[in-house]
Image 1 (cartoon, each protein chain N blue to C red):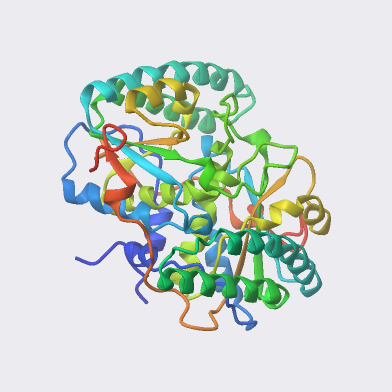
Image 2: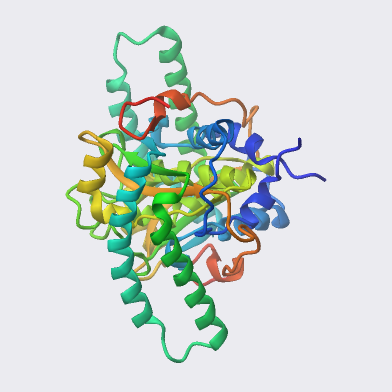
Amino acid sequence: MAEMGIYEAMRTLRAVRRLRPDPIPDDVLRRVMEAATWAPTGGNRQPWRIVLVKDRAKKQRLGELYTRSWKAYVGHYHAAIPSTVPAEVRERTLRTLKAGDYLAAHFGETPAVAVFCFNPNHMAITDSAQKRPSVVGGGSVYTAVENLLLACRAEGLGCVLTTLLCESEPEVRELLAIPDPWYTAAAVPIGYPVGRGHGPLIREPVEKLVFLDSWNNRL
Amino acid sequence: MAEMGIYEAMRTLRAVRRLRPDPIPDDVLRRVMEAATWAPTGGNRQPWRIVLVKDRAKKQRLGELYTRSWKAYVGHYHAAIPSTVPAEVRERTLRTLKAGDYLAAHFGETPAVAVFCFNPNHMAITDSAQKRPSVVGGGSVYTAVENLLLACRAEGLGCVLTTLLCESEPEVRELLAIPDPWYTAAAVPIGYPVGRGHGPLIREPVEKLVFLDSWNNRL
């Protein structure tokens, strides 16, 4: 069977939050994990690990923690929808929030959750001296996360990059026996989609996001 | 022409540091930038921008700043190679360092450098309260960087994810007129490879990087 094309996979990778409880074959899951291992990392140190959670009780507990953060987030989010947005945008936003509610309520039934961990001691965090939030450590983790998401897409698996569980990091570390000095960067629930799953994206165009040689000089 | 397969692209995406000065056709560069726009970001906020640097004088200046950090980094790196490592590993490391020297010396001749910027105000940084370096902001930038790298791979372009220029962020922001509150996350030099370019990777296997349900419980 021919592989899915690289552009097709990227162009149709959606956040899929409604996932079926049906199990994922081991060989499929393994291909998805292997794709993560290929990602570039600073100095090729690969300072990340995945704890793949399939245990029902542990997923249930992750779901409780996720729901706690999700409810707080949704409250902010609803408040932040300006009354002036077009009806179409409002409806799309409300659909996304409902899908988020579904994910939170069904976290425990998701067949697998990939919890990405990282070790800051194995990272050269070149922006640590800057007076703004550091992001560079993420350069050696989210490349692997993106590979995993794209592989899920190619395998017909729904998935979504979530970071809300980082708010409950002490509880998550205890639940999964994550030792010092490893911390959590993301949790990716994985499963076959309830609905259509992946498909066309809503994104800003190149003209808005890319400049040539100087800020605001459109490409 | 059929697209490169998703797994083939990921499995052969190397850090290519020896790049030819030959120009890159505009339509090729555009496809690579568009791939970045498709990446998932928190709340679909897309809190990143690219300043694509093609101006020779600006690339030259970025090269000076890069070289400053690279020389300091290489010093540490040489000192950190244990005398006990096998000759093969030592030689591979020295080859990588030489390729890094080449990149630093030829930064100005690289046809294009994609400087990724981000706006922390458009990010929900869920690990900001944790007592360790924050990485979550990177989850809305390096997904786009990885897409760009994979698209380069598919187009036969060499590229490498670098973050050393973050150490010179004030100078880079001034050079590219990057306004508040936008900061820098990565610089990706792009060009056709001098040598073989992409190919097989050296990576840790799934068995080392992925656990099942609990830390150290191998998949």
